[in-house]
Image (cartoon, rainbow, N blue to C red):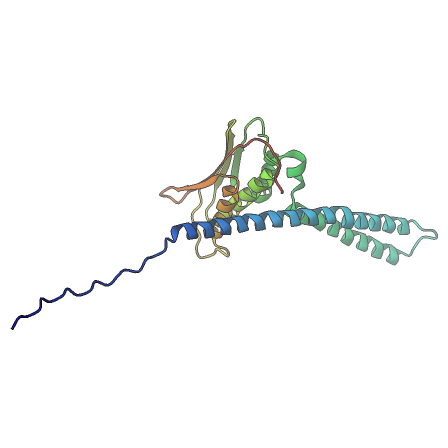
Length: 249
């Protein structure tokens, strides 16, 4: 009896796997574009609100102060009690005017628009460290670069976020901001001698850092961080200086 030769077992065919790298990359780029759009939209909204508070609410408050002064001078003179009440209302209104000014500065710093990035950075550093025992130093080029429209506010927001990270650290005694520029590049370097404070942080520094990376990435730049063995941190922001044009911020 002749036996048939045994046939080899069939080899299962592998399913073709579609390449995913291109799809993932496109998704990441779309997410980055969306975040950049939201950041720009937020700045536009804040700017519009700041202008409205300055023009409309400022005009109303100014007129109210003038009316109070006029009432105080009416003849016959008001009673002492009425005058004291008017003065109290005026003081309250003046406090509201000061609050309005501070809110406007938070929404859109007028120093940035009126005097440029370097002046705004000096103002922010004084505001951050002025009432503390921290020794703060700063250095800038003699001439501020000609930035594209919209770039100064992005760099200013990055500076605010870098200072927010520094405020989360403990035992900070000295801080430094060094700004450098050449015809093709711009740098901001923030450093402090503090140490991390994980127990008392109300916010995650990584979130500020992620926001900074996203902001500077939209300007084709990057953020680098170095930490010493003692915990001191230096954060450097770099971006290329492109020809001056117009953006939508």
